[in-house]
Image 1 (cartoon, rainbow, N blue to C red):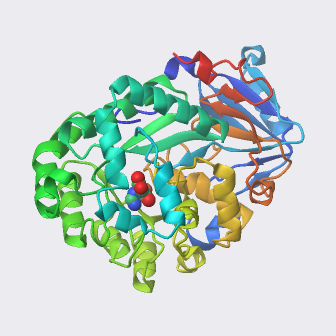
Image 2: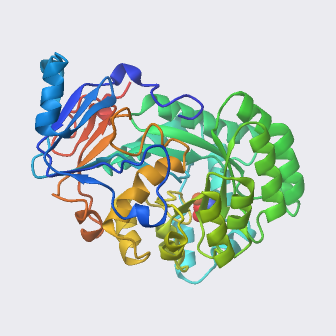
Image 3: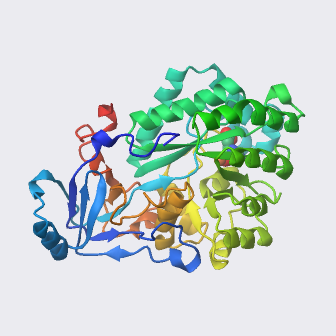
Length: 447
Ligand code: NIG
Ligand code: FE
């Protein structure tokens, strides 16, 4: 919903009855993230029936009760498609709340250089890293970026992702930053997966402003942010607050300017060094603080107190061979954790939800229940969308995933294996592994 609203694809909204599931995991939490101990039990129903009408959930509960409710209302059940989930686990659609979806080129050489010992920030300071993707993205046409984005969304959908956040940040000039956000909007319109856009003009200091980060922030505030806000091209503003990139003072300036224009705030916080990004997120009332590999104990406490969602990206820590974020300490402080891929060409070139879940368990020490909460309702909260997506509850959007497994506990257990069998978006089956070309609204059949 890059400036548009989720529901832009209303003509595709469907009527669906999901029956016979071994379990339905609701993640029901009302309209907010679950923090601390409340993350552990995502809410598991057996013997339940789930009904979606015009893309929204209208009934969920014991099968007999729901059938009686439908009969009492005189609902013509032959209007509904049926999804037989026998022996399977049904979950809310996964929400990938932190990605850098729109870019051109790859950084496969950089991956080898990093493995041979060169540092991520060292490569960036020599004009490589993010800046090499900037060169490729500036050269790419809009059509090329759309083509690449649609293919990436197909791969994400096959992993059970029904909503994805997409950051700009590979333009670092007015024209290309705007183009990236316009592409995100077009992807949202054309693909079943909803795309929520974030303006990350402050992702790196471009060559034109080398050594002048503060002047670059002035430029973004004066020349780019107003257009992003007035055309509603992004819902959030993010900043890479990092040693050698943008200081906390510079981060504060751009985020406050964005908030004054009505955008929500996010921060790439304490990723490679403890700069106080988490404390800044709490002070400003950001919706999320992301990464947090080096967050201080004070930062952990501040996030929990302020209700800022900690978006953890363990695949990036894995790829960079950095220490993992202190997920258990965040939960012990009462904080809410979300998990996301950080899909990008440099630090983490992966859209793999199975690898993410496995690292959530093995590296972060999260339970299966906490992992499911982190991928659904807490991820929705990290996008300010917890009132419409992220859980299976009456009134919410009918977005769900069917796993080829009887329980959500298989999700981290099947290390790196994609268990997603079917995906439903607003009551329509948009992915079916058993019949990839034949779904009502498969990627190959998009508008
Ligand atoms: O979240 N840290 C900054 N941004 C991304 C990496 C982007 C890139 O390397 O292209 C991140 O890790
Ligand atoms: Fe990132």
